[in-house]
Image 1: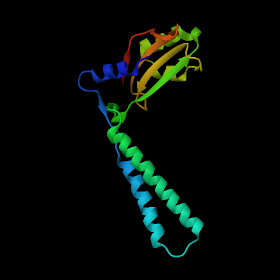
Image 2: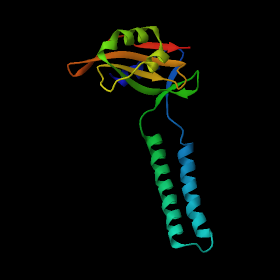
Image 3: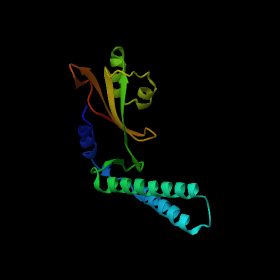
Length: 165
């Protein structure tokens, strides 16, 4: 299963239905601002115990470091993740695993584009039969393909199926 091949097929859809986009850094920036505000507030408030001052500085510093790391990761990290224009949502990647005895049902669900039925089927921890899926949170758009794990590699059981409601 190669996630990159599925992404490339999604990006090649006509009409730019799915594009590569980075997540916003607004929340990470707000985290940094809250951390700075805590440290400034610690210096402005009156006499409090040393333990409380240390806790405020520790929490503020931790928020600053986390916010900066997330911001740098989003700015300088990977090229981006799939974004669906119709729903204005990022696509999430999932791998669903099933028992080998269910392979016909799994392939039929993938070929028919039955995303909700696939999600409702009983899953396994062993990846004998796997479905690689990119989907919106409300399952209105999905791209999926079934694979079989044989001889230390995943072999396709179906073609890539793109479902849009």
